[in-house]
Length: 194
Image 1 (cartoon, rainbow, N blue to C red):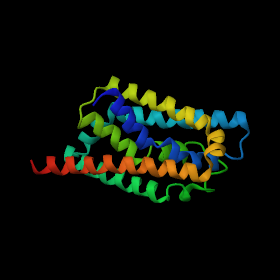
Image 2 (cartoon, rainbow, N blue to C red):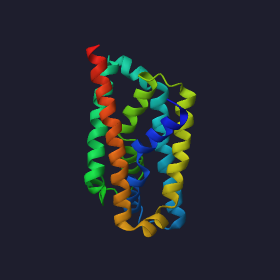
Image 3 (cartoon, rainbow, N blue to C red):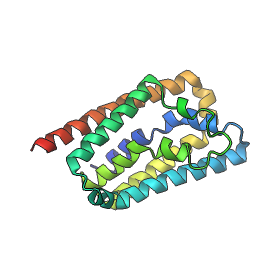
Image 4 (tube, one colour):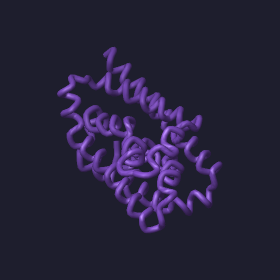
């Protein structure tokens, strides 16, 4: 996979447009300066966690004796479930007001941005596809900058697109992610039987 392909996949998995309504809901009480600071902090923490999984995720898999086919199948199933939630609009209901007073790390950084699908994808790209760490980190940096830009412009985008526009964008990204999930699952099944 090229740097661009890895970046597009990570962009779909981290789903900044899908996470935008959650981010706006959780951080709605903050003024403009505190909002920018919280967005930068949460995004940096999420991508820091993803970078650690890109760097050492394969060792965790080796320690747990997880095979590549099982990781691919499990990753595809997780991506599939998350993509279906994106398509049918059930991603943010769990977090609406639960963490409004202290949004540090949870729910924005983890599990919204660096959730199970993103962490699994990082390990899959590292172990199964053998993508070099510099390529993974480069793609991660591009996605970090894109996500940070989307989040910093979040209040403006939320007003401009409106609730329906954000939902439509999230569902489109969910459909694309579902295609990746099916391909990942099928590749794992094929590897399992060969």
